[in-house]
Every structure is written in structure tokens, then in C-alpha cells.
Length: 288
Image (cartoon, rainbow, N blue to C red; front, side):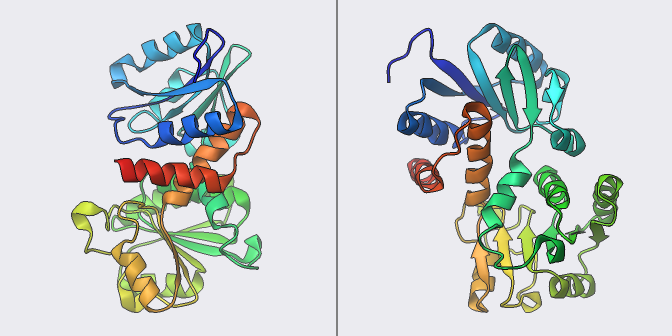
């Protein structure tokens, strides 16, 4: 590609950042669509975050993504927040426009885009989703689901106080949309029976715990969509168990894909081809 003074700069910032697939995705999309832009991975320590943002203000930066550990701290340094991002209390995408930096959170809506075609004909108003875990990604997804208008999101966590805190935050803005439970077998069984989608938002199933699952196989049912936010490995133990009983499964690659495509759309006004985007991400995973 030809770099010039007019080339728009985009970036992903975090610490560490070497693992990010976002440069593979966005540079590939810029090239395919013909956008004069370059997307860079930038490692930055928390103490230098404000200086970096000040530097961005002086440059031809069109926007940037934020990953761990800066999704909350970045809010101090930007000018405006999208209402959903403000409620979530975290930003993963910033749009730089008319000398203003506007913060968004596309994580939760990325999850929604990834399940829309997989939940069949269930109306949103009748959809109950069980989420296991209580981390930052779970908060983004749970609040986006409440904002989307599903019937209920059930949050299960070993430390039930954390689940209750998140459910309370959700219910402040979307009354009656969230319920907290602990992860004992009885509570989980009742929640699974009520839900159409079960989501793993814990780290169980990642490489160092590949043989573990947050939900016993006996609690699963074939009518479920079992969604694991983990995308490496591509098939977790939870997904293997679900497939064995005939349930539909999905890993976290599509959530990663769609949160990126939504960011791209915020920056450029163009929503890219998901097939191309997924191919670019898969190439990045294979290279890594």
C-alpha cells in the first residue's frame, strides 16, 4: 500500500498487545474496500495512556480500539460517550471526528450480531440467555442484551455477590431484565431449562484449562445454543459436550469478528463483508 500524508491512522492500544488480531482484520478490510488507512498495534502502559491520547489528537487519527487493561481508564481522556458505553462503564472503540473523541462499546452488540441468525424465530421479548461468569466482557454483553430487549439475562457466578451487583446495575437501567444466581447444580439446572442460549464468559476451557468446563454435561440439553466466548481453542470442552448431545455451538470468533466490523462501520460508514472478515481473522490465528 502507498502511505502518504493523507493516510488515515487507526490503532489498537493495550498492554500487552502482541496477541491482537485486530491489525490483521482491519488492514485487510481497508485494502479490500479501498480505504486509504493504516491500522497499528500500540503497546502503552497505564501511566502513559493520557500522553498517547494527546498525541493522537495531533495526528491524522480516525479512531482506535482499546483492549485490556485500558477499557475503563480511557474514559478519562475522551470527550464524549455513547449512552450504552457510559452505562457499561467501558470503551473499546473511539471515533475521532470534528476534533472530538467519542467512545463506544461494540463488544456486546458484536455478540448480538453473532447470534441473530442462530436463535431461529425466537422473538427477542421471549429470549432468555444464561451467562456463566462475571468479567468485563460479560458485563458488556449482558447490558447490550438488556438494551436489545430480550426477556431476561441470567448471570451465574461462583461469587454470587458479583453476579448480584451486575444484575442490580442492569436493572437500574432496564428494570426486571437481569437475575443473579450462584453456580450450584440446582440453580444452574433451573436456569438452563429456562434459557435458549447458554454462554461461557469464564476462562475455563482456554489452553491451560482445556479439559475443564463451567457447566456439567448432564445439565445441557439439545435445544440450546451453547456459546463459548473463547475462540482459542476453537472447540472447548463445553462445546464438545454440547455437540455430543446434539446442541448447536458457537465459539467466540464471531463475537470478535462482529465487534470489529461494528467498529469499522463507526469509523468509515461501511459495514464490511463478514465472510471476508472471518477469513482474515482465521488467517491471523493460523499465523500466530
